[in-house]
Length: 489
Image 1 (cartoon, one colour):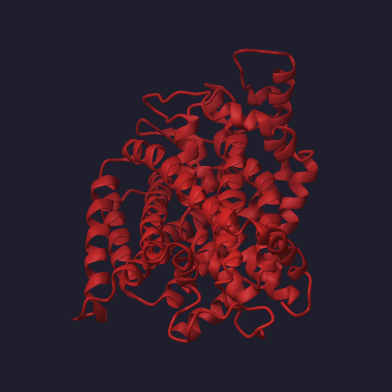
Image 2 (cartoon, rainbow, N blue to C red):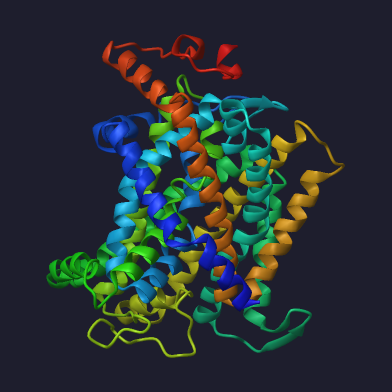
């Protein structure tokens, strides 16, 4: 099974997708005149500029829901894996894909807002909606919707829950073995799986508003706490910081680390973590109540910074500054050499051992707790994304109890992922991310060639902003944007 998954990944995550992600980010950065830099202050201002309504959530809640998807296992175990397989230079390429990806995030999230719909009293939108409405290719939209439901409803949850199980086991021990239909698993993982499934079920059966209310409280708290912990560790090793930054930059281009490996793993884990171009962010963006589509596009661009430049960097610096990392297949000149052969590089062990080297046993426990919240909130985002794509399909075809079936499948996937090996879980997740990224990035590039709706929205918003308006308006007909039916009303 592992060999089969690895073979599929070699096709999905070929160098073509790696460079497509970078090229799309650079392309949209140039076309928007680097909106991620020009309007950075505006992004922050917009975070609290809208309020929740009966039909939609606020800008900050939409940011929290999208961040709950972006800030997850990729920020702890994923960064460790990128360093382990690609070397310290992979961190540099994670920064690059985040900076360029912020422009891609603007484009896809603005499209999500432009072509959103009101379905059953709630705002819904995402790539499936804008592919059908703007591109006019319903078959392509259906392929994306079905692929996304499988990816975020079945494949990706295994990655998040698997990381929770591994972290709990490293922090609290195995506590004995239990024979099950899944094979022999530890009591710790079994108990963790039961707890995660129970709490997750309570929240997802409460709908999008309960998800938004939960994430807007948990996300700022957990991200800030994690960054403060990282800053504390950096402060204890502050004299080594310049050398670590130099190592990251120089290793990104040296043959010893392997430029291909550093770029490949940095971009792969960068896209997995910040989700720019992957097509997941537009779902939460479309659910928000805003005056102008460009506003939520800018807020979602800011979320990429939070995810990679803040949280991922915190993990990377903790691992590197404490010298607690190991690069697969690279000689000791590049490695700290801490992990034994019995610990998988895809696990959160790198990060836990880095904290343990400074804080003792509490380090492992802290990472386990942080990872639980990071991964758990990501599971909530995955469910919302899957539900939105089911809602898209329900516009045409309805099945009895489809939402309930989705919830059961996702909860089953979470339980299974908690007790299985990390490499298989990551492999399945990589396939899901890769296929979604292919479909979405190709889609938004085609939409650019067909009419540039996201860029027209940005230009319109900036013109109103420069004119000093207090109430923004959006008229798609005036801008030559077709099929944006929600905004016509």
